[in-house]
View (spheres, rainbow, N blue to C red):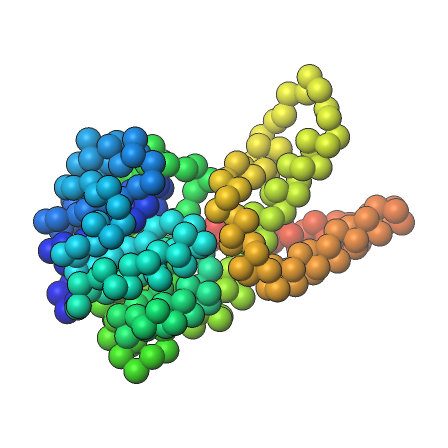
Amino acid sequence: MKRVRPSSLAVIGLGAIGGSLAWQARLAGVQRVVGYSPDRAEGIQALKAAAITDLADTPARAVQGAELVVLAVPPRPTLDLIALLASSLEPAALLTDVCSVKVPVVREAVSAGLGDRFAGAHPLAGTHETGFVSARPDRLRGCVVYICESGTPESHGAAGSVASFWEHTLEAQPVRIAAEHHDRQLAWTSHLPQAVAYALARSLAERGLGGVSYGSGVRDTTRLAGSNPDLWVDILLYNAPAVSEALAQTEAQVTELRRLLANGDAPGLRAYLRAAQSFRQGIDR
């Protein structure tokens, strides 16, 4: 796909990211945007909102005639769809995805013989909300999106076209990155916070504080635990080694905090908290 804006686009999965991507592409002038969702009602919502021009009843029918196909579903269905759709894509069509893990997806694309026509993508625009109701026509505008080549001989061109689509059609900021580096980095910046939010929510649930009104502290720190578990089972398992390493180092920080409390070490505790505060304030700068 040499043109910056495809004339025909297929989006498989119409939730927060897929629905937003389709919607924004339509507003950017993509003439034909075919959507597919396993939840028929979700697809009808997208059609009524004019986020898509057509609603297909199967993924294979959705990709017919599409110059670019975007898989916007969790990792396991993404892997299944790559194998399923390999023979259904148009000869010159490109394939991409939006998963938060890239190594297994890139590997599957190469295995399916699509390495030269595939580039992985991961927009940093996620939300704990699910379904097309959480889609926005501007959710992806300005976001960083990681682009991962497959490593096959012609993959550089595919990655360039996918990056161009994100930059010029969706107004995002593409950043090239190796799939392995992406997964190690995201283990810390995305998957660890998600795992910790789930662990904190579990701890509070098991404590059983009946009749308690939870304030903003609990609500803010457990917000991510409201995410779809089916999605995160896939992500955490596919990136388990890197996530486990991040969790182990986080456990060491919790152990240190407990030690400071047990010793009544006010200066040490203050230094610990200030270091954390400084990092958090730096994120917003």
